[in-house]
Image: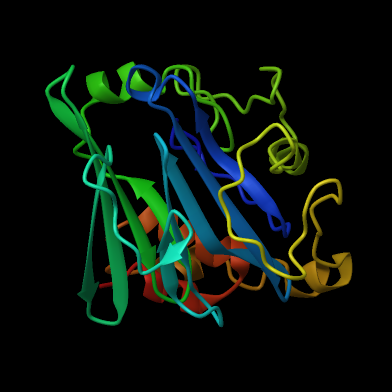
Length: 245
């Protein structure tokens, strides 16, 4: 999902830059990388790493991936006393939710994110983050969330990229990006390009679940439109369980 709220789907397998922002909190910096893997004809996130200042928080999980978290490379570690953000987590029914909060003392508020693990992993910025605080901190950000000010899909040289696959592949983690995600044998790494699902599997599974069916399946979802989009994109009704508490 772009900052503008517009949704797109990319089903490649590789490490991707979700957000890059060296100017976050007056130069503290925020980087978010995700690792995707192909599940039959679509891909899902299996790891998310968030770097704020000098600290890196990484979570792995979802589908058949063993759930665990690391802080600065230490499994089950803790943040240092001078860390620039706080982490809390809770178990809600059959899923776990991590909350990451950063105090913005200059603007008198906080930047907050929720990282959720159930069948799939997802990350979103909490809606109570004010527009003024968000604009002050993300105006110069880039990555798969697009341009904050215009909502456009921009490449690394701030060129507009309309094609979804080309846009995503432009943000494959490369040598110019910090290393955030833990090494994993068999994961697709630069200079190899993102692996894509076979056209045969995509064609066989295309269009079986319509928007109307997805809307019925997602009834009761807190984030209804997100649920509908993901059910249709993955052609998998079980995805709705990640949205219904």
